[in-house]
Amino acid sequence: MAAKKETYTEAMKKLETIVAKVEGGELDIDQLGENLKEAQRLIKFCKDKLYKADAEIKKMLEEDRNGEE
Image 1 (tube, rainbow, N blue to C red):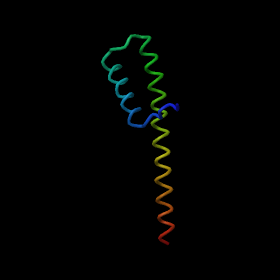
Image 2: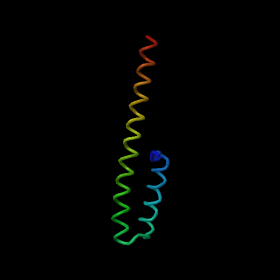
Image 3: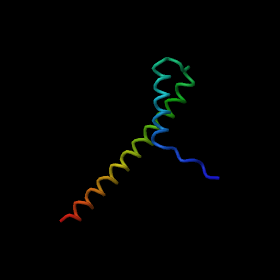
């Protein structure tokens, strides 16, 4: 069975939860380090998704523009 792919929305919710815990002082030093590593992974994942979506949109707009000429 293949692992379920994480979505952008799920990653953002996880990131928001980590930020709330950090801001609320809910994490001890061990948890803080682990959570910050996870936050870093989530930020990279979300940035990659956004860059990919941006590139796809630009490509579609360019194709649409070229089709109108």
